[in-house]
Image: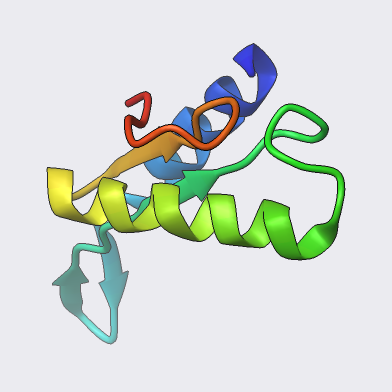
Length: 79
């Protein structure tokens, strides 16, 4: 999960920089949910379901963050 976390942090840091679009400063925020193969599933549907659940949690925790789906079917997520 370490490489995935590093990648997610870099993506969030890069995208969340202010952009100038047609002379106006625009701020973009990012939320991401991560699921790790095979820790969170083997089938694509399960990985997507786990990542979606982690994304939902990241959005509720605030802007510019990511959450990683927990191993197995627990209720807690790692931020």
